[in-house]
Amino acid sequence: MFFLGQLGKYVPGSVWPVMAQMELGRDHQVPERASGAAVGVFLLVVVGTGLLVTAAVVPLLGADAVGAFWWLLAMLPLALLAISPPVLNRLLGLGLRLARRPPLPSALSAARLLRAAGWSLAAWLAYGVQIWILAVQLGVGASPQLLVCATGAFAAAWCAGFVLLVAPAGAGVREAALIVLLGGVMARPEATVVAVLSRLLFVVGDLAWGAVALLVGRRRVSRVPLP
Image 1 (cartoon, one colour):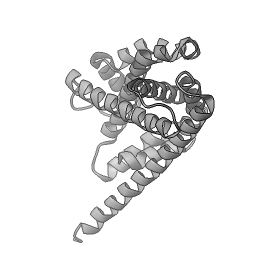
Image 2 (cartoon, helix red, strand yellow):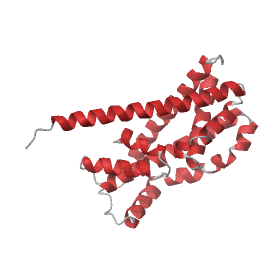
Image 3 (cartoon, one colour):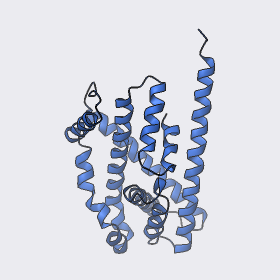
Image 4 (cartoon, one colour):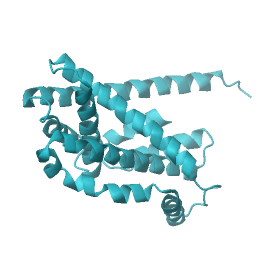
């Protein structure tokens, strides 16, 4: 459901991943309100943790990086407030009422949100490792500082692409931001190659996981005995 639904982000309009996962969830007897709420919480947690990583690392990338992306840092308090359990549960309730859907059977707890945030932080680190590997392959010296800077630069670039809905999946915005942010730790040509290769790898990865999910789904359907 997740990997197939994520392919919707390549279609213009930010609602398609949500709509796709709600439709796929219906095929697996998942209520629309549950799948829709899950995607909404997922996005809020990803953005909130991404901004947290941005705030922690971008100052290490230099004054130019802070000056160019101060507006992202200013969004951090609002994002953290939005994913706090009392506020988030109220937002979910309001959204379901506006959509004329019944409320969720139980509220999200702080422990569950913290667990989701932990997985999200691990994902940001994995994205940083991807950028770090590409940079090292291009001749940039491998170091723990480069890994930290790569993680923060990617988090900031992804959040910028998500907030500035110029193109599907933040295309163009993410790459431009990543080039600027990586400029403090590597030359502009290397940063450009890293940004372009990272985007290509993401597209290939999304398509590959989507294909795997589709094949697994078809195999399960074919194993269901006929009545």
